[in-house]
Length: 147
Figure 1 (cartoon, helix red, strand yellow):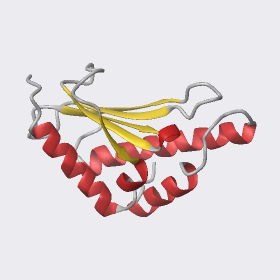
Figure 2 (tube, helix red, strand yellow):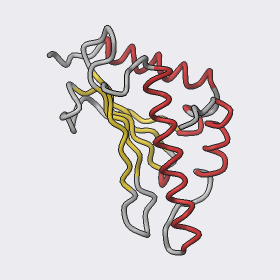
Figure 3 (cartoon, one colour):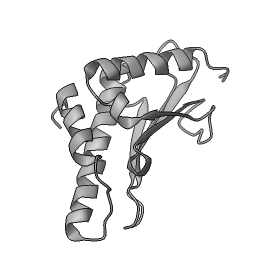
């Protein structure tokens, strides 16, 4: 898989997540599949390049849901380096949001308090990705979750 750059991240948001993603037609299903593939690539890049995780320290999942919904793409990590928590990050196109919260492990599906950000603000460019990574690292380092 070729690494995605922050430029392709911005174009991903503009092109794939700016219009509703639904699978009512073959074209709609192809659009949805492409959006989920790109979302998985971006979350993998974010985990490795911005959070400093190896591929053994996180999972990236895609749930396309039914034809009437966009589904979601999720990053679920172990504890971040130097932190006492991991992170759960989920892209949801129907609300154009990023949901994120701390977790104690990849088996923790409820975690800390849900927090929300606009997907266009997070995935705009390299600087916004760096800022989001800093927010996540601070959140995980300050987390009250214990081993």
